[in-house]
Length: 346
Image (cartoon, rainbow, N blue to C red; front, side, top):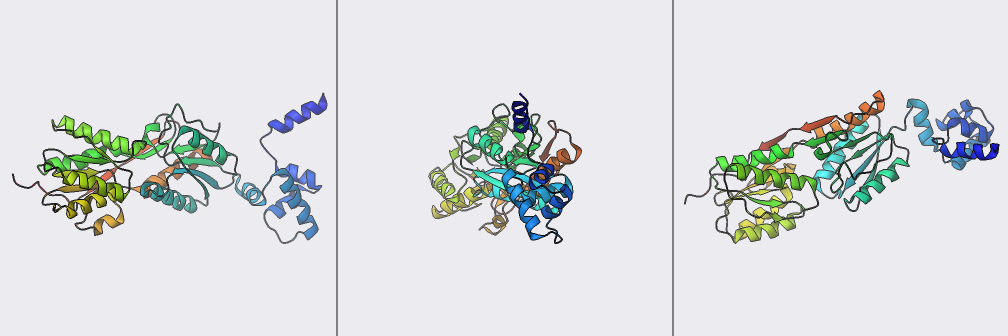
């Protein structure tokens, strides 16, 4: 009976402690601490015993040292989807920068698909590593009711759909899109065509919804959006289709890369920008100011988003409280350049 009880206890405790390492090695916790911290005043044979015990128990010396010094692993887990996309890459870059400033490292998983199964599996995988909390850059297909996360793991999501369910930080997609559409309407365009992002993308859907809603509220025609995949190639294909339509005078693209492709296709078709067709992008990449003509674009402050994600996660870690109602909606800004102008005279 006592052996069964002891086995149950071993299975249910949270994991090996420095005391477990000390008992297995037959040494004091102070000695184990010196080894974990890389101290020089330890005999080689003693160091080998400690490291062997750590290896047997699955207790990493590097992680132990962090935990002993700060009470945490000083590591943040990050889940992203398609890091080749500009928005994800720039957000992760900002998270890494903010984490580094706080003395944290980042452990990253880039999931292949945005399905709830893959997102959940990635979260579980990271939770089994030595991380203190988790940042999900884009939940995509997952919803607050379907995304299963490890219990008691501090989490922040960069997705405004999760506001009210999980701590969330996101750009004000609707406001940015509405401002872009209104800018074109104010210039005198009768309607605005749209090259949207992939159907499985949450931000793409929010931008498409806001585009359609603003046109409907203004009593304007809402044309069928052309679906792209965030790449300049898909923008070029969309631009070729748009160039065949004589009534196209304004195009809102869901990101700058597709906008660049649209602009090249229109140029190849003899449609001048902005004299014949105005084009707006989204993200405001540094390159956008150096296109010909310079591209009007909706600026997403990726640096602020990344820093707010880390700030919200560290608040949970340091204060020991949940922030389920916490949300930050980062403002967007329309940066007007030379790719937009009034429509050609009838």
